[in-house]
Length: 241
View (spheres, rainbow, N blue to C red):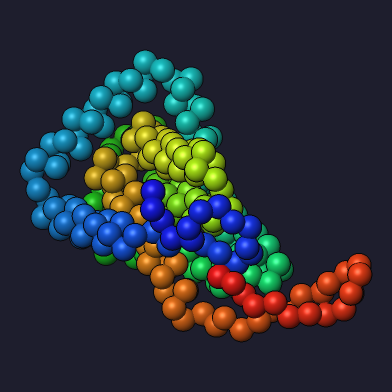
């Protein structure tokens, strides 16, 4: 995982920059998938229908699990996602990390705006008679997009301060979280598989592009920091992000 920011360090204001190939491939795959959804590509529709029917049969046999998934899936609903993003952005800003706060806030806003616009513009009704009822188009999955964006942003923020083992653990937990939320959307018949794949791809594309844009356009002006103890006073330190 040769992401930016080098080895473990403890400098404030740093965020890892994934290789450009990640958002490039994710963006291309997302555009192709969107085209297939819009075209009503028969093999994709058949795969969606077969997968959803398998989840329906399993859910019918395990109503208790369905009840649990109805609760856990909403970890990545829009309101919790926005609250977590606002708290994280505010915390970073309070620490003087202007660029990281801007990046986090931008991801928090952009992701739901983008999938919301796609729900409005892409006609892709959800499965009928699901275990949850949502009256809107489903491509891409909003919960899955939110989960992927949250997980990837957390990894990029933590990456510079982690050693190799910590990085492996962080990436593994982030991937499991995003996958889990996507699977809950399938199991609840809230989305077709194409919707969930779209949510994963949207998050993988938007977050790195937001990091690159923030790195390029947000000011590197020094942030005043209050120093206490010996040599107390107000000092300036550069935003090292």
